[in-house]
Length: 232
Image (tube, rainbow, N blue to C red):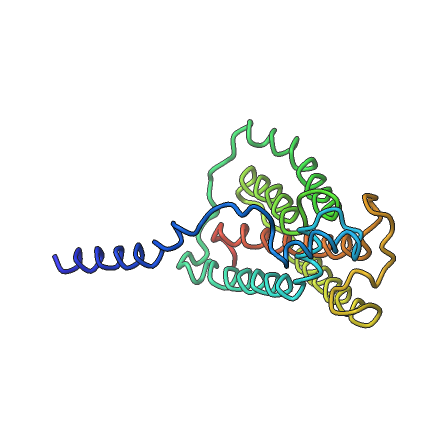
């Protein structure tokens, strides 16, 4: 009985705390001063048609660096925990389950398309909605399909580690390039901005998003493989 009373009191407390938001929430008629500055200045400052990209990669680039670091820590944690030894599986026999023919056929047809679509997303992140994180997730989806269609398969950890390390180093290198040649860390103006709306434009933003996309794809792929629980 006491437990139910405590739960009800906690719910009532949350409702009381959130009640003012119900009266003040709504759609603003016009953006605020900071949002207006972003909308007006980002195409001029970075030649990026996608304002969200300019904000994520440039104006708040340190936050993006933190997000990549958190994802790396999550990958390392999952990889360390989900092993045969920690799961108590020892040297158990490999699973006998085989994928269906439909899944294997679909994997063969979709893997290349998903990888190309992921690359397209982070290469065009400065022009259209998308970016490195979204493109990396799409690439990891292709890896997931292959793991499902071939349960006994394993990723080439050497290749995945190399991709993750090199893309991370490239990301930091591009950030330092902006600090030395432009106005701050991850400033894309370290490279020529080009013409607004062109594929080769927005300075270093396409390269930054490419590095993020490859790193996110490699890290998520490692997490998916670790979730199988059959690592030695």
